[in-house]
Length: 628
Image (spheres, rainbow, N blue to C red):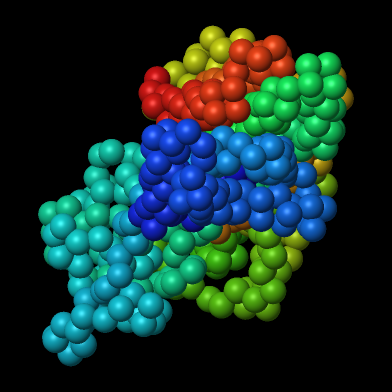
């Protein structure tokens, strides 16, 4: 009972009226029994019955928790309290047993009430999940449960309403507050074609949306599930304490036995059993981790487990991808250079047809340029994305390849007349895409992207946080990568990096003992995200790849939150260390005081719970960490 309240993954509300009233009623029975006996020279039968009823109501659940733990072969701190209650009953100290049971149960409820403040983030996410939706059918509106909404249906969302499912705006315009998902307080403007997400708030316009993802597939549902699952992943310090608990209970039992043998006073041994419960130590790490997960979620940072927070707090190397990470991820096509005898529009057309199903930001730039040019798309078959190189597909019977000119260029397949235009595109810092048909170069498309406004400040803050290395790993050409690195103050830069090259750089850092954070766009950086100590994906709102491949996902594109995440993780480690140090000192002091007769069993129960509440409050302070 006491032990299960301290587990980080328990979401059931413990501070319920029925449970509290039962404990309070048992306490009143014990008080009534005490008052009756205090008026009599010897214990009365009625007083004893009332006191034993109190023990039964509050003490039996604790004893049952201990028995259940033993049957499951799991160490449970209820064992020590149960022995203390049983020892008091054997001695005839019924009032002591009742008082200890009451104090321990009420103390556990107070601990959980305080601990729940660390879980407010997930409760708030659940609370904003809409229960109903307004469907449009032939101009009529029908209110229906969200669970009955089907993909493809048209829904009406009025100002002030929560958007019920993930969808696409088909009619109308509005500002939508997505802070519950992304942490961004400024509402986003939405127009026809814009994506909207379940749980976000429609601020000032009437919009019609087409449902695209419903139920458990919505971004909000995935976030709730992933945050819930995150608490089940035990950090390193929790696993250490699990091993510690295996021998802690036998040690306390031995201490109680020694006290009894040396003093002959059973009360002192009972007090040792009570204060010896390692609740303070067991609460030290899980409560801090849960509070930190909740604070990160409020800031739009989705962490898949407490162990990744520990890794972030210990990391001393941060490596960035370029496109879509340090740059805005909204590149535009600039110059198009065609090979002799090839039309520029043909180059763009073939590239757009091959890229039409790609999700890479450079592909979006090509498709947008093709749209403005009025290109008619042909069906792309056998499309295959090659990470770090580009895409290839069969279009109108020909094999079309589109990829980084730096990755695919060789003297044999790159005509002499196109080498100078290639160098000119590279000099501007743009990314050149080579377009091939049946292995013959059709032309080059120059695509340029802008550096994020927040990138320079982010790099400066990371450097000020005593990071050993802040670097850039790019598959782009040297000039483009170096221009971005120089503008941001990044000293370590690697260019023309294939996926295996990025892995080599990561492993070299790890081999030297460094903890590496890799930040990518979650689309084509899966190997690096997986190999790093911590992989952080950009723009996870609505992006399945980011939610699935990364250890941590930023729900918007704000890389300025990375320094805050590192600060938050480091502070969490400090809180955990303080909690553990306090827990050890507290238990040693309490056991020594009880053995010396300074604490009675009842006083020991009070002191025990005071220590637990102090640790919970210390951990809960993580939820108040300001962004800076």
